[in-house]
Image (tube, rainbow, N blue to C red):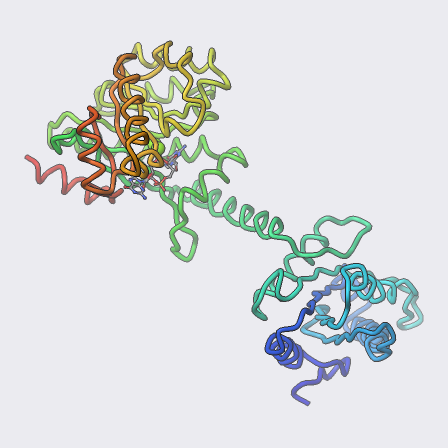
Length: 428
Ligand code: C2E
Ligand code: MG
Ligand code: MG
């Protein structure tokens, strides 16, 4: 009884779990298909609960007869999980085509009308499937991947109602999830920031880079490496930037007022943000409202802005530079590293990307490559900072080739506002 669904007499979720666990133990190829009836709620709502039960019983009867017939040479096992959710397990098939045919038989079984309480009605279902071991290798992940595919095809609302799981579906799902976290954090103003110190080669503090931080509703930390690309994709990055700008400048202004120290605050600006009509006014406003001198504010941009929208970006940059704001080119070396735009002097600082610092001591030519970037920066009148410096040997190499500044775990990780304040006050 504990393995049988009382209403439909199909095996239930416990039976399906055991079945899947057993197949995994045997380590044979098999597939789980997540099935969900379409619009079943409206059947219940319009015809009543009892009629809904009749529909479930009749569909189960049709599907059970398919799985019992075992005519096609493979084995299928149909179970009812809950409500209008079913799980079909298929093994012993040879090809993808054969598998798909097996599933199509279950879909086709719904093409004949059902008669309930003298009413004819048609029911359709959505089918999503995932294969062991290629799509997932645990029972939970197999079923959740099959569910994802099922939900995806249900949302698509197309005539096709069967979909195989793919990693892209998972990525879409995660993107959507992250998008929601970003929207919530913006609404509740919980986007916050960390500050990572930047030093000159004698270990004197130059200032801090502000880095956006975000948590989901359970308090789990979401890495910017994950949420920044999503924010860019869905057009929320300028709002994230602005919140970080507003919160960090308020904090920094306070710190400067309290300590009187001369430090730089570096802010990351996305292309979308910089190109926005109100960008210059936004920065002017932040400066006006704070005790930060314009030359204590630095905006980090990536090279792609200067390549993709060179004229418009340069116009904006030049106006801000006229106000005294500094600019840095972030992640230098990973993109175009073009001399032509550097020649237009769009910035004060070049930030050499961590990937070059990682390799700096791998061989002499790697080191000379970094040395060449530094020389080039100096010739163009730029200071140069190295990002992601973690080891003493990297620091030594950078000193020997004339780097001006460092930012990296070796001297300071990104830290909370409170810790940054402690660091600064300990210096006076
Ligand atoms: P970025 O601007 O190049 O920032 C430096 C990143 O390198 C930070 O990662 C920092 O934590 C990390 N890092 C610094 N030193 C070390 C080191 O020694 N070792 C290692 N392994 N990592 C180091 P984070 O905070 O994860 O940020 C990633 C990227 O996200 C940033 O790269 C930046 O492009 C973007 N980002 C962060 N905050 C914002 C923001 O407010 N607005 C925009 N548009 N982008 C942001
Ligand atoms: Mg940066
Ligand atoms: Mg960088």
